[in-house]
Length: 310
Image 1 (cartoon, one colour):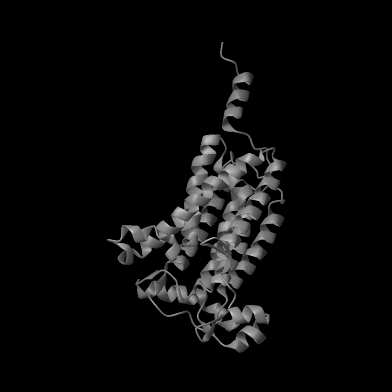
Image 2 (cartoon, helix red, strand yellow):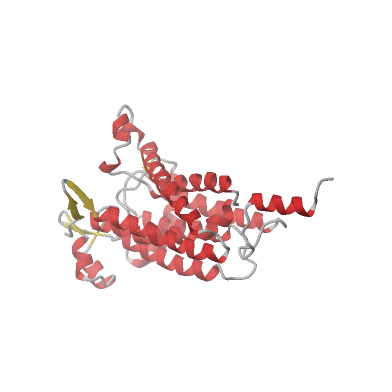
């Protein structure tokens, strides 16, 4: 097992998890700054955005987890904020970050969709890198697999296989599945955003669709999923959608409560994103991704100059 603690600052241990998450955030924001320069946007805007977005994401991640595990936390208010005891959810982090971004962009006079498009490759990059923090902690893994599956089906190196040996058994490296899926998504977003006639918001919604699609399948083998007991017809439909993974030797979905919240949410996000893309395509006033980005205040000033009031 690799040591999850990178070094000590006196009595305070510095964990690899935090270092990796921070590295992912820095690389992600650097991608946003680089693309923002094409539109004449200052780098300070994105630095301020991440300073606001990261705490909001952390609060959202914890609040989401506590909400769906309420029976374990009700009556224990101090434990609700004890994030160091574990228990965060990436969809909650995304919700928290989006809320902060909507408020911040409106205060700065920018349209949210334009900024979300610029930030989308950085978001998926942060997730791609951040999953390796789970690897260092030996957490957020899938169900049991054979050593043969890891070494000879997935052809993983020794250092990775050894880290997936936890308490006497080998497990699905779900962090790796998500990281590689995010890497493919990053390449796709970087290509798609240079296509002509791309509408504002479609890069961000494409990111949501891609990530949610991968998360739906990976979630099926996770052992720590938030779940609830739902109707059998819905559970059966989800199992049917997930069944192609049997061809990759993943085996059956992990047992537990029959509806995994992240799988259900992934389906919902994909559906809503596709509907939004279709709806916005019918509107004549939606900007193209390649159009200049202007602040609302600047647009009003230009309009006033062109149409002076007498």
